[in-house]
Length: 191
Image 1 (cartoon, rainbow, N blue to C red):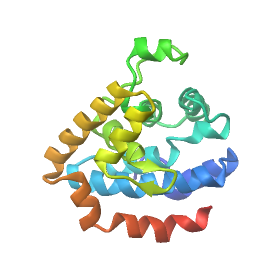
Image 2 (cartoon, rainbow, N blue to C red; image 1 turned 90 degrees about the horizontal axis):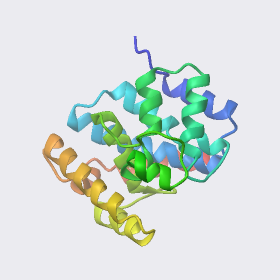
Image 3 (cartoon, rainbow, N blue to C red; image 1 turned 135 degrees about the vertical axis):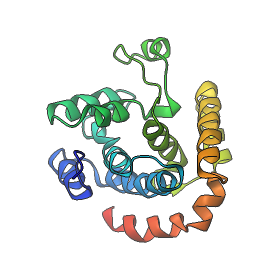
Image 4 (cartoon, rainbow, N blue to C red; image 1 turned 45 degrees about the vertical axis):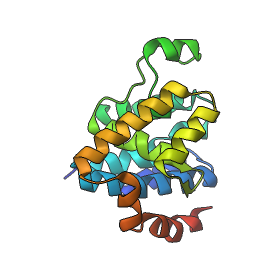
């Protein structure tokens, strides 16, 4: 039995924290993308499932960058497993170093995805805008347009690492597995 909360537990936590429905729909789509990648690259499916569903739990308090530190606080208060808490804290924008986080006004810490599961969740989150699943190139361009050149570079590097582990191009994997269609049919009702 897994020490990570199940999908049902995660949705219960989202309800209890009053996560807005638009964010619930977003995390549902991120979950579909993350689990598809995780299945093909050997990541811990239970951790990726819980982290992808709870990565934006801090958006129940704020929608700014500090949603990450709020999410970590909520996860710790709920006594969730430490590697899940860390994954929630490392999902943002392909990561920020401790110095970058300080410059952005985030609490002291290193927000870089380190584990395979961190990278899968962060990468999947970067591919999903609201509920739309972008190509890797479009997601990187969107980051660049926000002024996050280093994050775009990191995202592309994580993508290459995941592609090597999956044995195929991420865009092709998402097309082949029909994740866009599955996410639309399974997540749209949450809005």
